[in-house]
Image (tube, rainbow, N blue to C red; front, top):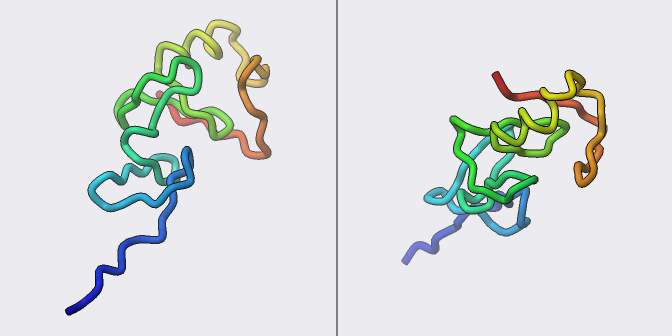
Length: 91
């Protein structure tokens, strides 16, 4: 009997194994569907409604509220982790 090898891919949010049936890839990172959440409100995101800034995920309303209102994407907001890479994924 052949053993199921599974996957070695880990979720970026919880660091647990992600199986194919529950896998979601965004910004070249892998998540469980349930772990793909807005950093601000913890609401579940979809590939069609998320934005990413400095590797942090946001729902579109909170991305607009936190970043577009000020007119500056350089400002660091409380609770937003800083990272070396600045990446904006939102249209």
